[in-house]
Image 1 (spheres, one colour):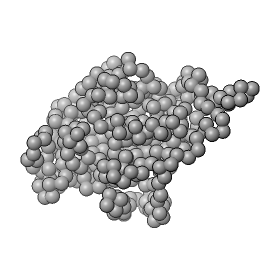
Image 2 (tube, rainbow, N blue to C red; image 1 turned 90 degrees about the vertical axis):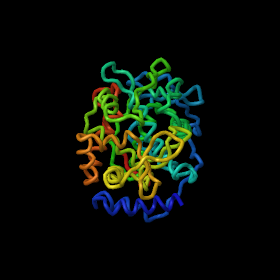
Image 3 (cartoon, one colour; image 1 turned 60 degrees about the horizontal axis):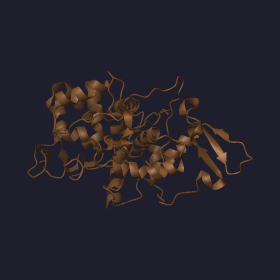
Image 4 (cartoon, one colour; image 1 turned 135 degrees about the vertical axis):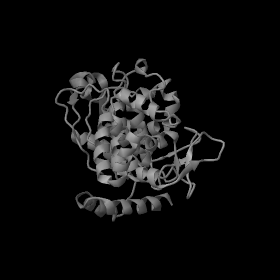
Amino acid sequence: MASATRTFARALRTSARPAINAAPRAAFRQSARFYSAKPTGGSSSNGLLYGLAGAGLLGGGAFYLYNNDSNVAPKLFVPKFEDYQKVYNEIASRLEEKEDYDDGSYGPVLVRLAWHASGTYDKETGTGGSNGATMRFSPESDHGANAGLKAARDFLEPVKAKFPWITYSDLWILAGVCAIQEMMGPTIPYRAGRQDRDVAACTPDGRLPDAAQAQDHLRNIFYRMGFNDQEIVALCGAHALGRCHTDRSGYSGPWTFSPTVLTNDYYKLLLEEKWQWKKWNGPKQYEDKKTQTLMMLPADMAIIQDKKFKEWVKVYAADNDKFFEDFSAVVKKLFELGVPFKEGTETWTFKPVNA
């Protein structure tokens, strides 16, 4: 059922895409899509092992390959674009391998993982951000805003095992990029070079947005990271994806009717639907009056209750291409917060596999 819903939603989404983007992806979707849960042969099969002794070389982007034969000198391995594309492809091939997970895709939870790994940044202190992958450790993994993200981290462990040279920090962000693109979203430029850090770099609780709060809170959180009002509203568009769970955030339900396909429907629904408080025993949230199957959080409603925010909601509701353009730019900015990239680090774009 979930698969049929995604196929229908993607067909509608494709009809709205500019022809230059829609044609190749539409052609791919006409063919059968198969996903395998069986891992393919890794690099260890030929007797080579990734040695972390070279992790500090070239800014952490180079590793030594050791052969089981002690008479063979280790080889320096410097990952290139093609190596990261292979990691991207591996993630893409596994996104929908479990039909019974959520709406049939791990995509939304991977976007949330990348978002929350990045959204801890504080521009004043230079702490937090996507450089570190400190959510691997308690207490950060136990922060309320990160509830349920163990599913995303566990999902990526087999990928990390197959490509041990990639840092968790780079892997989590690459997974977010992959998920957005594979769910029919815009191309997200990517730079590698993040380094993993230890528990000492964990950030304090309270740096991520609180869904129960309103516009003043949103501005305090996002201004701290260096975003403006337009960028705040553009980032909120990620709520077109996924759903809330009572055993994680306490809230329940999806924001849109196609939670595994990225569109500007989030903004359209905010403006066009009538919203009412949901009558239940859970935390305060809104439901659409018509079907009572969609939800909005107090923080979502805040962007149409605030005049400055609402102007951007109207812009994105009216123009999906504009939303995609701004969303791509602001997500790249978010995913690079706090990362001390080496001068000359290349920016790459990855070819979608299934979208």
